[in-house]
Image 1 (cartoon, rainbow, N blue to C red):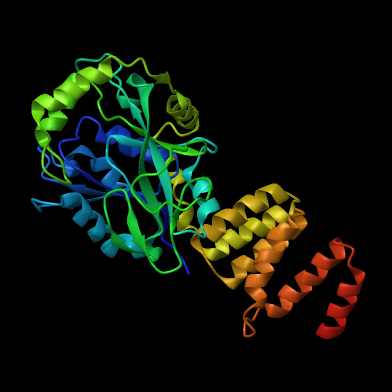
Image 2 (image 1 turned 120 degrees about the vertical axis):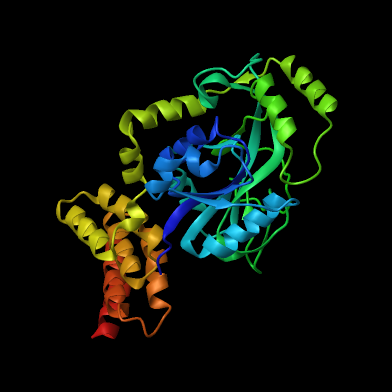
Length: 373
């Protein structure tokens, strides 16, 4: 079964024309393959702000016209309309940037959590860095001081395992599924103890004073608007905090842009889902024939993101056996052997014999060969 996209984003935006292109490009750089954006009556329509990304098939814009509870309703709509097209879907805002810290591609992190309904990622709140007016050069370049390691989380979920949207932060999951943090500890609310060694969300909540005033005026997509004077007092308080330097996102962008400087490069980076099973199988077979087992492992990992079939499991078992990953080999063999009607079951037993051979379990090899004959 194919998931058309492995990693996607859903967001709702209003009057974000100054920042949305940078936000979109960044998330495509780190491996998200498609972005769904609900336009909440922006003064400059998002479709006009992102024409090249829409034309390239990387962004879908949906008009949102509701007056209340826009964010939760948009998220529900996105899950219902587009969830079947995605393996993973992140729900974040335009002032939030997901930063994979242990990898350079978000898909490599999500691979680790495939058995769970969702991954909870914590905010790091970034301050205004003394900017009173909008600085040139974008968000990532100008804000690098963390003023709060926040307990709030945002979620990247598997739509097939979600049945409701509780808040913009937390979701309800089907029986047996749940959300975990990066340490695989269940997270059942919109808040949890902060952890961000593997992945974090840079929440550029304040930016410049000019930005912040505009944020207050355009209101919230979740609830009643904030008191203007109280919000400005909050901005003044954060200005007094020195903050902790965090340049991870800047280093990541520099590394990514060096190998993907153009939109076409970005498009190619997210296009693995467009390969057919035959193309994947041919690439993996070629890697094995050239004894490039590490590359074959990487191709198997990518292949298994988009296709969940017996052929994938068989290839994965063989490649992991060649790589000496015995436990991973056995995991795929289990998937093949549990179904008595699986047409690749005989091949799986042959691979199992090789598995025992490599473990020097000659008694098991002989017993299995007798059974197969």
